[in-house]
Every structure is written in structure tokens, then in C-alpha cells.
Amino acid sequence: MYRLHGAIALPLLLIASSRSSAPQELTDHRISVNVDLVVLQATVRDRKGRLAPDLREQDFEIYEDGVRQTIHLFRHEDTPVTVGLVVDHSGSMRPKLPEVMAAAATFAQASSTQDEMFVVNFNEKVSMGLPEEIPFTNRSDELARAISTAPATGQTALYDAVLVAQRRLQSGNRDKKVLIIISDGGDNASKHSLEEVVKTAAESTTQMYTVGIFDDGDADRNPAVLRRLAVATGGEAFFPGQPGEVVSICKSIAHDIRHQYTLGYVPNQAAPPGAYRAIHVVAQAADRTKLIVRTRSGYIAARERAPVKDDPDK
Image (cartoon, rainbow, N blue to C red):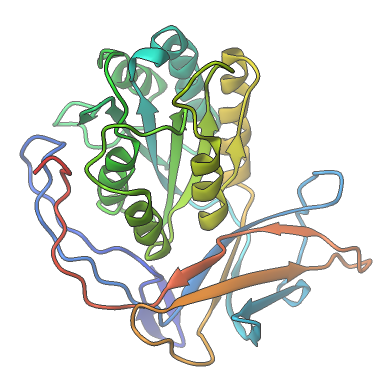
């Protein structure tokens, strides 16, 4: 939660409640969004891919729909994060899960001790990996165990899984929200659509990092979906050549998350409810060298929504 001129503003934050029944059967809730303060997490690198660590507020420019905005919030610190690991357990993933479990453990070890994490497993069904009495953890062994408990069989309900993870994410008490999605990107079993996933992402501050694991002959692979989710939310898409590379990728993601800039602005003009607003951020180093900024590509302005169920199967 951020303060702006003494008033509290919730930055594109999904507000949800939950009940203590089965983890995958969270309560119905109404999603509401407050865009008084639009908050962005930005990763900044130079042309060689190195992080730019010493930028000042005046080194950034933010544009919404092409109009420059005044920056009201600027931070560069290791902010605690709520992280959801969304792991594909369809049949094709069976030989790859040991590397995924090792990657989850590595991610936890490279993260802050103040971070809180959970696991969503999916094939044609979606389930929470951690026990009911442990909604979040920062222990590497618990994360690996949470992934190992689900069988790798059946089809792929990727979109349903991401929506369940999005809603569980909002029950965490860290302002910064991240999903790491490990899948081939294909979907052949969801009751929800890709457009619903993208729309929900645009109404939140969640960043999505995607890791595409598939073979060249995998007919269900869909790297375009994984790229779209990452680009839209300011995350990054990775496509390892070998399953063994997933460990180093997850370590890189943890490093990326811990070295971001937090920027916030109040839009110059209020958007009509439900309107999409495009965001573009520019940064320059002190020597005027152009830098590459990665952040979310836009957001959907606040509007009333009908209640949405957490479990897509209900």
C-alpha cells in the first residue's frame, strides 16, 4: 500500500477475501480496482543487458497514451514479494518435473526471506500445492514438495490455472505480486479463455514471468501465449533449450525481481471505466546513454465487475 500526499491509494490492486476451505475452492469475491495511483515495477538494463542500478527519479519519463505524466512515487529497494509458481503437470511434463522442483528451490534460496510463495499445479484440473494450513511459504523444501505431490498426467488447463493463481496472489500481504508460469503454453482443457486471463492481468499489478518447456515435436506448444502474458505485465518470457536451464532461469528471475524500480503516477486525465491505457517508460543514464526499460504495457481503468469464482470448475 502506498501513500500519496497523505492519502492512501491502492495501486491497481485486486481486493479479495478468502475462506479456510479447500485451497482450490476459494470464496466468491468482487474485484475492485483503484487507479488513483498507477504503480509500475520497472527493470532497467543497458544495451549489453546489464542492470542500471543508480538511476534517479529525474532520469525517468512516463507516458500514458502518449501524454507525459508527473512521477509521484519513486523507489529502488528490495521490496518483499508475493510469488505464485504455476506449474504444468500435463503428461508431457513428467520427465521435466525434477528440474522444475530444483528450479523452485533455487528461486526460493535466491529470494528475500520476507517473500511469501505458493504453488498452483495443473493438468486438466487445478489444485493448490501447499497444504491447506500453509497458504504461503518461503522454504525451498516446501515448494519442491508442493510441486512433487501432483501427478503428471492428462491435458492442460493453463488459463484456468493462471486465473486461480491470480486470485490467490491477491490474498497475500505483500504489495508486489509476481507469477512464474512454467508450461508449454498450450491449452486444451480450460473453461476460461486467454482474453479473460489478459484482461484480469491488465486490471492488476501482477508481473508474469513465463518459462516455456517443450520439445520441438510437441504439438501443444504455444510460445506466443507465454510471450504475450510476459510482455503485457512487464515480466519476461524464457525458452530454455534444455530442462536443466530452468534452474538458472529461476535464479535470474529472482535477481530481476529484487533489482527493480518502483514508479508511480496519477493519470493526468481520468479514463472511462473499462478503457485500456497504454504505458511507455523511458530512462536515460547520467551520461545520457539510452537504456532499455521493461514494465507493463498498460492497464484497464477501474470499473464494476460481477462476482468471479476462484475455482474455474465451479
